[in-house]
Image (cartoon, rainbow, N blue to C red):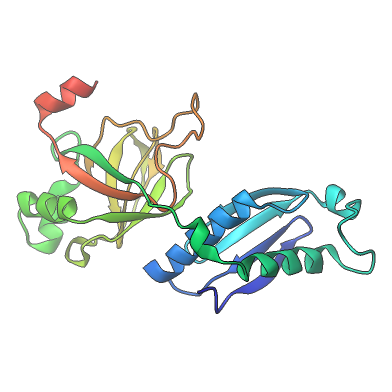
Amino acid sequence: MFKHITFKPLNDCALLVVFGDSISITTHKEIQQFHKIIEQQPFHGMIEAVPSYTSICIYYDIVKLVNSPLRKHSQSIYDYIVTYLQSLLQKNVQNFLQANRMIEIPVIYGGQFGPDLAFVANYHQLSEAEIIKRHTAEEYTVYMLGFAPGFAFLGGLDETIATPRKEVPRLTIPAGSVGIGGQQTGVYPFETPGGWQIIGRTPQRLFLPEQYPPTFLQAGDRVRFRAISEQEWRSFV
C-alpha cells in the first residue's frame, strides 16, 4: 500500500500528495486511509487536508512552520512537510482502518421532481422504470465533496445509463435534485445552477450548517438510492 505516492508543491501554503492519475476504487481507498492518518496525526501548522479523486491537498500555516522549533533551520518548509508525511506512510496503517458508512437516500423519480428522466430514458432507448431500476440497483462510493458545500461526487453509476451533461445548464436547480452527469451521479445540496440531467429529488438535506460536520455525506461513505412514492415524499417534508 502507498507504493506510488508523489508530492507536488502547490503554492507557499499548500502541497499535493498524489496517489495516482486515474479514478479507481483502489486509489480512493488509499486516499481515504491516508486522510484518516493525517487528520489524527497532523503536523504542527497544518490547517486542513482535503481529499479528491486522485490526491490530497494539504494546507498549512506558513508562519507557524517558519517559527516551528521542530523544523531544522537548513530544511525548507516543503522538505520538512514531505519528510513528516513520508514517516506517516511508513507506519502500520491497519490501525487506521475504519468501516465506511452505508447511507440510504430516498428519491422520488420523474415528473416535476425529475424533469430529465424522460430524456435519459429516450437517450438510452430504455423505459423510465428501467432507468430508475438501474439507478437504485447500484452501491455508490463518495469519492469527494466539491462544487458546492455538501455536494458529493458519487462513483459507481451503471455505465448503461451514463448520460452527457446538458449542453445549456439550468440557471436554477432545486435543493435535493438527483442528477446524472456523464458517468457520475450526485445530489444538489441546495438551489444552484447546474448542468446534470435531473432524474429525481430527495427530501434529505445534504448541507447542515448547524451541525458538525456540516455535510450529510463524507468522502468514503457508500450510498444507495431508494425510490419512494409521492405519498412517502410528503411524510418527509
